[in-house]
Image (cartoon, rainbow, N blue to C red):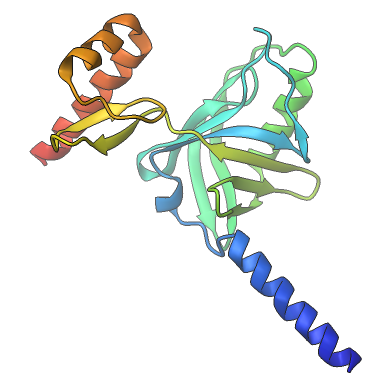
Length: 195
């Protein structure tokens, strides 16, 4: 009876863990997405207050990665190998980081520069885990796209759909960052359509 209870517990545990974590993360899962660091070893990051940046990773074509690790910019070639992740040939700026961002910077750069186990959960949170550090990133893409009722592909920022050109132009005029992102997305879409 005890053996049966242990076996049932193991099967339930295995089923639960497979429901929450994707077994193999592929380049397609990462490319063209932006991931923002949520926690280090289960602890939330401090408020930035203009002294640091929330670490983030942008995965582009051919697994080229750019982003920041707290106060320095990083670039490199991401590699997925047998369930492990690392950024090879990582290049970083070399600014001094005020506390506590210096420690955050070291933890993030160490995890990115060494083989980490990688997983995605059901909410698309990305987890990188090394021997002493667990980094959890949330998916937070810059720009998304949706088909509006008029069946025109219109980029939008943080949800919603712009149904008329007037409100789209109004939002572009009021926010330069949105305008720049819109133009960049439109340019990529046009290049894609040209083939």
